[in-house]
Image (cartoon, rainbow over the protein chains, first blue to last red):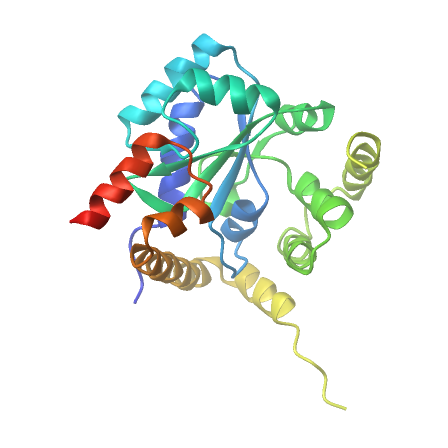
Length: 183
Length: 70
């Protein structure tokens, strides 16, 4: 059966549509790989945002709740902000009471995250109008930091699908940044 | 010696050649997986869901127990 709707895409679009009113965001990792055609399962969509202050977050959270999103950690935006996001801990949002798929949200925590937000891109091949971290950044993270069999297969998939457009120097540059900031 | 098929490479190349057709198949596969996972989760008691998803939102916890009583 071929579904007309797109569970992951719809969830991501509705979340990003709200987030973009308050700050810059990037969608990273598995969701980009799946939207680029990789046939594998995922339970969540990872989103990194440029840090915002408490008052802005309260407004953002309120709009998310008005659009049927709930945070698994707390319904109090002050608690979500101070106990999690500000401490660089991720939080998860679900929509319409469904635990899968969910959104993992976190603040950019270092220069590497800031760089990814600075170089964010829309990627027409994915057919979804949202900002992703660059293909090069995703390959670099998967090959240099994450390195699980699933991540290495993800990187391989991205290398094949985007083989005509890849900037190898950029991948190497980000790998060096990973060593500097994360390893 | 039989050459082992590299599914990642096979599928990536197939997708690149015909993204429109492959995306329909892929969406169907992903949506089916999500629906199946959601159905399985509905069978779990609240405590298991709280443990799996590390839920600390009291409103969600309350509603999970209320639903399980129905």
